[in-house]
Image (cartoon, rainbow, N blue to C red):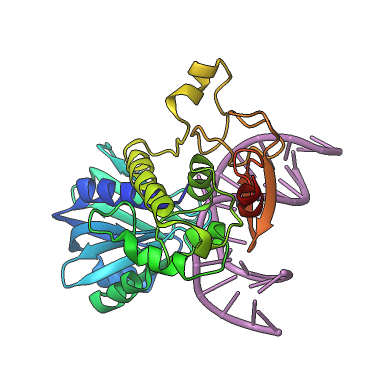
Length: 280
DNA sequence: TCCGCATGAATAA
DNA sequence: TATTCCTGCGGAC
């Protein structure tokens, strides 16, 4: 479930479990073996996330750059009695010297050893990350307000804004009653600021809980007397993957359409098009 | 048991 | 826009 909140949560988990310890680094699967050997046995200094990128820092200014892609997973285990044999294709395994903690990386799109300079390049290419306290939403606003591209695409562009994926994209647009195909340069600054502020709260919550929940208190399953969502990401949402089902607020059928290879979801009544909104 | 799709993004064309 | 990376899950069979 890798949107930005997942990576920030992992950075905290890794730091808690490994920071300050000597760590054995290996690649049971083999694809990361050569690089792993270069940091094996070094002190892990900490882990940090920028958007969907994770950097695990080792002594000597060396970093393991991880990007989970669509289905990568990093499982951190603490307080274990013994470290089990790897199951499946484990690209990278971290084991604390005292064997009380280990972490397994599988299916990642990126797992590479980089320098501080290379890490800084990745960060420099990224837009502001709503989870980072130092993020500057105006940097994203400059891109959005000058682009005719649909806001739904701009929100997913990691050089505009870092960490938002398909779920947060669909949900923040719903919460702000904005049609995903609306051109960026027709969005008002106040609307953008409101969406950013909302993402800051929603994504921080995601870091805390490890899930994406976006429904307001009055629309929770308990409040509405409906069954909870049974889905692999677990969170309660308004429109994401609810194609064809009734909108929780207005009962209109949730729509879907492919934009730039990704599925968009929106409510045609709660999120009217810019044109029809202007006519109203 | 098999198939297709998924919270992502680089690359080829 | 299509392909690729290469994991896990749910649903169709």
